[in-house]
Length: 164
Ligand code: RP5
Image 1 (cartoon, helix red, strand yellow):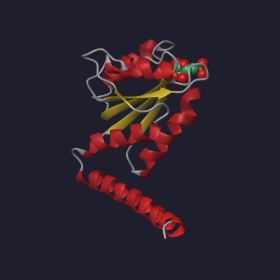
Image 2 (cartoon, protein in one colour; image 1 turned 90 degrees about the vertical axis):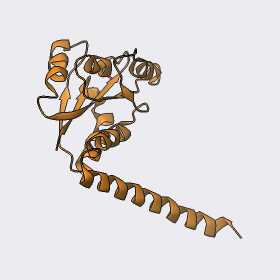
Image 3 (tube, rainbow, N blue to C red; image 1 turned 135 degrees about the vertical axis):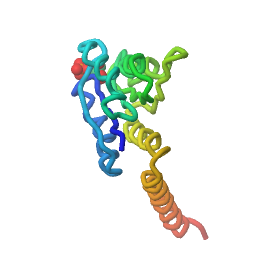
Image 4 (cartoon, rainbow, N blue to C red; image 1 turned 180 degrees about the horizontal axis):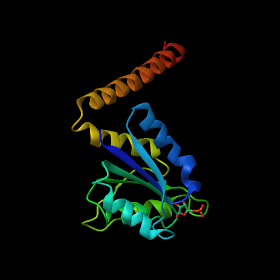
């Protein structure tokens, strides 16, 4: 199976990124985690992205806050799918990271999830790998079914309490 690259701009992003790590572990999808910054370590960030395909990666998740051009910098140096996680910071509540991650010019796509949406970033990466992996697709189906069963159980509970 291809690996997922998880890159964060700072170790201060780890509490958010942890949700992606947990999700990939739950699906037993292999991954590597690195701290590379588009502005503090631009050479290392570029080298990772440039060599990611030949190093066995199938998609890259890039998490960064503030001006947050990490996902775009990854996308500029690979044609692997890049998923951006805008990380919330204290001054602008993540709007800064959201806009600088989602508003990529044509030619350099970044699939951007919600602010701090690391769980969905991992799920999207898994869905990308599942295009060519039937057993992974089955695990995704099972997870969806379990999620639906939980909601229906809650519905039954609430219905029994309020509906006469
Ligand atoms: C970004 O700046 C990082 O992704 C992080 O979200 C933000 C702040 O970084 P630190 O000052 O906490 O290292 O590059």
